[in-house]
Length: 409
Image (cartoon, rainbow, N blue to C red; front, side):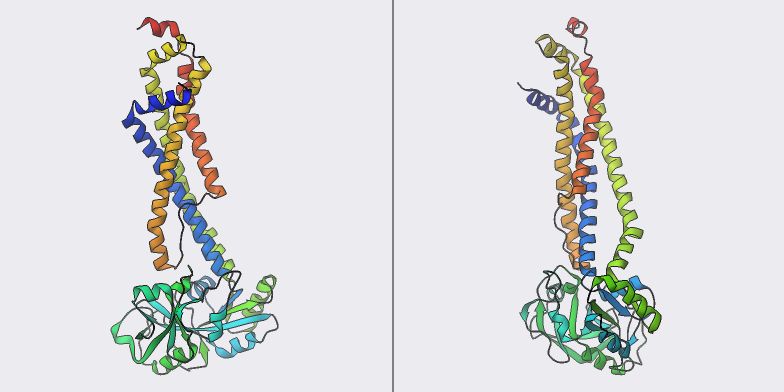
């Protein structure tokens, strides 16, 4: 028999201890796998969407809030700006595309986004986030195109009608009953925030809010008291990403508006907040693995004490000290490798469960655990820790006194 098969046999002679040790390793590896995958994929998705537009224009306030509300539909708008600012900047020599955004209403928690028809033709890289799965784009006021999540969750089909609610909270008393929308198109699922949005002509938003002065506005609501004169925000594409900062500074100095760079704000968010959370969770994962390594050490050490006679017989039959040492190290390797395999499955399961939440809340699809360089490095570290844990028991086996142990037979 080879050392590998001997080691395997010894492990399964103590099934309960082996399985518990594998489970402890798997818990740590599963946590590490899930954290690294979620961090990698969510950051990638956020940054991909953040790079679609160079500048987000809106009312003065918190730039991160402006980006989250306009690009990701996650926060309340910072307010309204006069459309004259948008019109002036749209004609700026460095601007290649500019799209107005009007917000203030929602339907079943999904935001109704007023914009212009040309936004639906916008693409970046190889992505077509506004591609249609069915129907056609809006062509006149009160026609809407709905995202994949909206169509699925709200059970909307082509030709269906619905009315929006003033603000982003579903309150019956704030429903715009006299302004029904008609679904003319359904967007293909893009794995972007657009899956959670409803798009219409911006004139629809202006018309709906022409008489909303009497509403009690809740925090985060946007209402244009002068229809056609104000917008909530604007998405701007520049001739070159290199001039983002200069353009931003120009807007913030010279206009009654604020410009923010989406990718810059998202990177700040990850570095300042989510980066710390990732480090804490990774630290917990590695701590669990360290404890698991201690379990490997104790388990193997106790097994060596129980197998003194077996080891002595192996030595008497010709096994060298190095082979005995290697057999114990292989046992530690088996336990660690099986723990990593089970941990990978646990991490994939966690990612699958969280994927349903992220698709519903953000429109972001998170795949199963991917073998990224960071994850390969983490798994290599776990294997190293497992092998190191096997050194002391292996050394104890290496020092077996053949004559003494055989004398006890």
